[in-house]
Amino acid sequence: MGKKTIHVSDFTGTVLQQDDEVVRIVVLEHPDLVAGPVQLDATPGEVENIDDAALDVAVVEIHDRHGGGEPRRVVLTASEFDAMATDVPMAQLLKTAERVRPPKARKSTEKIDYGTLEHAGKPHRGRVTEEEARLVREQLDDVNKRLADAGVRQIDPADPEHALRYGFPDVS
Image (tube, rainbow, N blue to C red; front, side, top):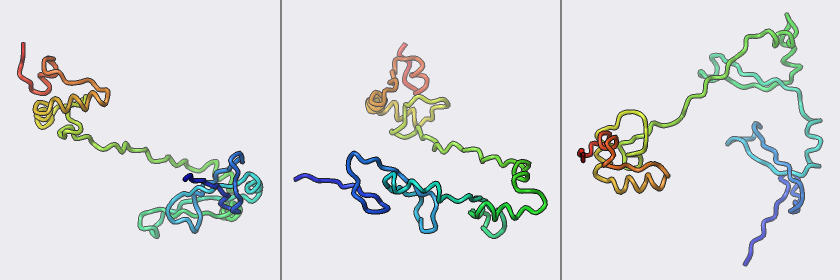
């Protein structure tokens, strides 16, 4: 038994042939969108006028006491937003306004615990804890197999540097 997948336009339900061009539309924001961005498929003809229907909008964040510390994002037509500037035209105001710097991205890497069998013996800068050294000494074959599988250097107890780092007896 075989299976056949049929692709259809999300907008019109039109069956899309295998050689048809498909346009992918990613919906980033919509009042009915509840769980983040979604993807829709359409034909080029179905979306050819989308640019004509586009609105000139201003997307602003309002930082005030009403958001519980979180800014509120508001979308309004550019002309409505422009009308709010009564002293200086909005175009001029935007050119001379103070720039906002995006927050610096933080490294979201979690700290690796080399004192676990999963990470013990991996090359790293810093001090080898007694727990890591004990795991390497007691389970050297398992550690070296994992290191070899990962394409990383293996630990040699006869190597003076490794012997010192992981507490192997001096063989010299």
